[in-house]
Image 1 (spheres, one colour):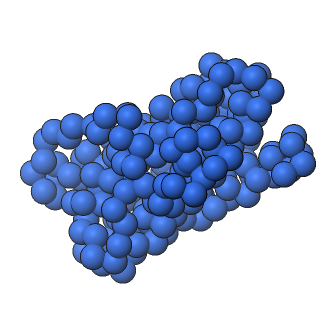
Image 2 (cartoon, rainbow, N blue to C red):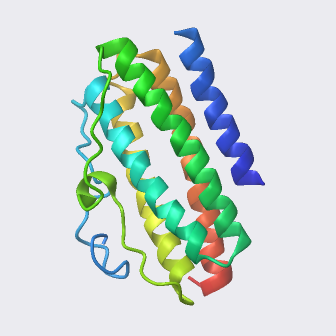
Image 3 (tube, rainbow, N blue to C red):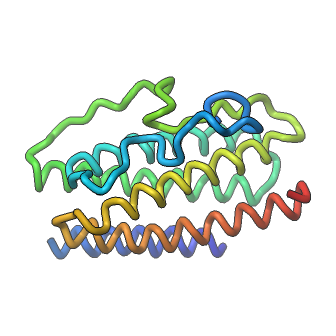
Length: 189
């Protein structure tokens, strides 16, 4: 319920601002992929940021859809549904901003096999460690998103992006703590 409320708050913040203006192989060996997965630096522009947001959120949706099918834990299924709902809304908002601010009317999603962009992790089969692999992958994914959001806070020229990034950092940090709590409770990790 807490995650659902956080997700709705984040969506509301995004909507309000719109109106007013591995990690590649086994999850256990997670040293190969950079935290953010996509280019993330202090020189990132708003247009590049929005493109990265679309790809990154699409990666989260892909993993969440897999978790809905393979997890037996109601907490994971609810969390996956929340991720799909929130990330879909965030992708929609990014498209609107790309169109309104930069005249961009189309976007080609990177191939989901391009894990450096989408940060999609092959979560493996439905077994007793599936939820652990999903949580590990989503924690990494959320940490990458936080890095990306922190990197856009100063250089952005758009108040909407700045405020949404600030709210996103808070919501994602809370989600990470929730997921770490589940890992500890369920797996002692």
